[in-house]
Amino acid sequence: MELESMYQEIILEHYRRPLHSGLREPFDAEVQHVNPTCGDEVRLRVTLKDADGEPVLADVSYDALGCSISQASVSVMADMIIGKTVNEALEISEEFLRLMQSRGEAEPDEDILGDAVAFEGVSKYPARIKCALLGWMAWKDATARALSARGGEADKEQG
Amino acid sequence: MTAHGEATTTAVRTPAVGLDIDAIRADFPILGRAVRGGNKLIYLDSGATSHKPRQVLDAERDFYTTHNAAAHRGAHLLGEEATDAYEGARTRIATFLHADPGEIVFTKSATEAVNLVAYAMSNAATSGPEAARFTVGPGDEVLVTELEHHANLVPWQQLCQRTGATLRWFNLTPDGRLDLGNIGELINPRTKLVAVTHQSNVTGTVPPVAEIAAAAHAVGALVIADGAQSVPHQPVDVTTLGADFLVFSGHKMLGPSGIGVLWGRRPLLEAMPPFITGGSMIEVVRMEGSTFLPPPERFEAGVPAAAQAVGLAAACDYLDAIGMENVAAHEEELTAHALQVLGGIPGVRILGPLDTDHRGGAVSFLVDGIHPHDAGQVLDELGIAVRTGHHCAWPLHRALHAQSSTRATFYVYNTLDEVDALADGIQQAQKFFGLKVS
Image 1 (tube, rainbow over the protein chains, first blue to last red):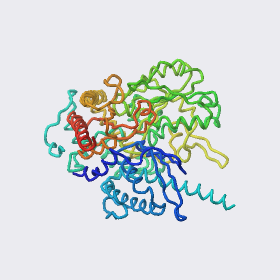
Image 2 (cartoon, rainbow over the protein chains, first blue to last red):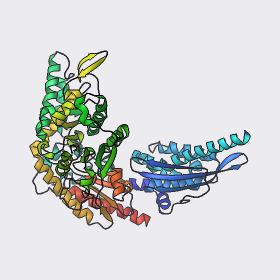
Image 3 (cartoon, chains in turn green, orange):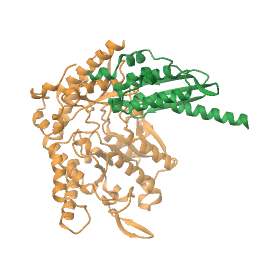
Image 4 (tube, each protein chain N blue to C red):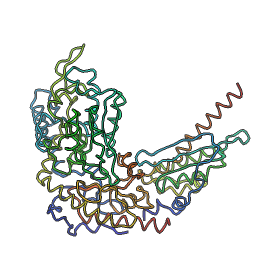
């Protein structure tokens, strides 16, 4: 059945028991994103640290309200990207966006996407793509803000 | 899951009011198509947009194939015919509402019609003395309700922001009706305008517009009613409605997209400054400035949507042939059945009144443990089209402590069997997520 291609067990598992949920301190940036068509929302925080001069995601914490797809997606995302460098996480996020825009025609790279390949079925339902992307868009926004805040501090230190 | 595809040839169970549903359904080509999984379409989203009968499509096509020209322009035969068709549509719609044709303004939508009044009110500040009664400013109040669709809320928030007036609102009772307990305080000499829905698009609530209007008129305030969900579904007579303005959309009442209506009392329209300006609405144009035509033309800048107006007139013909009393009775029976069967499912909570007293056919509900998007997805898999989300009524959902909801809405082509299919689908969604989630 088509429905089961969307609601893969892994998605329902994350929906049932979301990973890394709850807002944590300290954090470098916090954002609130909503999906205005359905009112789903996510508040998300990013904490960065330096590892060999490269920014790494020390923590991604969130509080999400929404459907199974949006909840599971943010849970999968947090689990995959915490501990990764910002550039590695951006690569995953780009691959995930490509998958979501594929209308079910993509051949997702499981090496890059890990558990997020489970969302392949969602890409066949245009109305649900925004659900799957809500957390990722919030993370990208929060990370950009955290990086620019750090850039600002770095400038100050140099100045 | 149950397939509904084989049900096309079986007789449909029709409500007792005796509409010939088989004949009505045969007028709507789209109802014959298959959707996901080869299922028959069960369309329960007419509150968002209705389907169009062949008669409406034919009328629009006939306009384009036979009379097409820019109405109110040109001296040629087609121009005359297009003008007659457009003005004939205006007269037809006036008859539908028991109004005068000069009081019918065509807009592109109900949303634009609300904005027309809201912007005319802020433009009044820079217009002549005849427009003085439309001006609002600091110290004045604009009164709305928590029931409103965003289209009858945001334009008033914006008007207040532009002018410095204060926005106030009626709250809801827990069962989704308007709390009129403080009407004497809310409607006061500072009140300049009251904007209220004539039928909620979420809870189906039909507020007492005439009672509210009487209180508003006693303090000299204007009243605008949002008829987007009432005009398609119940008989509406502007001579007894009480409001000064009424707005609605064509596409929700079997008519085409891109056409809406503002009805307004003639003396008000005559004193009201324009919103959108340009061709068609002017009297004399000089480089220094312009004068404007009387209503309704003053409010219809640009080449009119004549084909859409003709289609909407055909929709009025179609609905009048059924009889709006019969349309309302048919939907009341569907609504009563929905309230009963959905309300009987454990874990389902219906938003709004639980009986059909002053309640139209929008049934929004929550299913414990299943987000509306997920419920809607399972229903879609069964061929059942519903709306999910906050249905452009976010404050209403907040007031009823719901993040969002799933909504079924009914029209002339819906059947009791389709309501039963919805109830069955909700239980299948519970099973699907229940088995897998809990």
